[in-house]
Image 1 (spheres, rainbow, N blue to C red):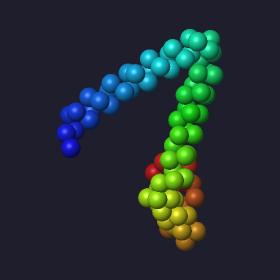
Image 2 (image 1 turned 180 degrees about the vertical axis):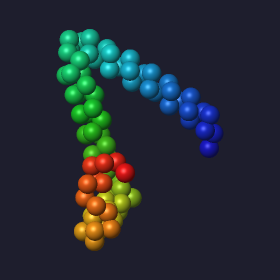
Image 3 (image 1 turned 120 degrees about the vertical axis):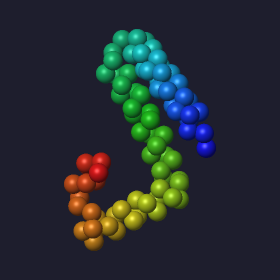
Image 4 (image 1 turned 90 degrees about the horizontal axis):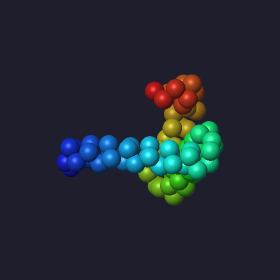
Length: 81
């Protein structure tokens, strides 16, 4: 995999996302509502993908087992560690 191409594409997508968020904020005349729409729609898409992706479902199951067995403290689920 060409990481330089991936990095350039990621930078392009970040710029496009910023432009789209700015335009949405302008059209809604409210930056907070624009952020809610942007992040909410992203969350919805990720949730739908997570429901149907076997690997993600298996990972969540393994995470639940590890938390119940106290291998992972519950607070780490919110800490991003």
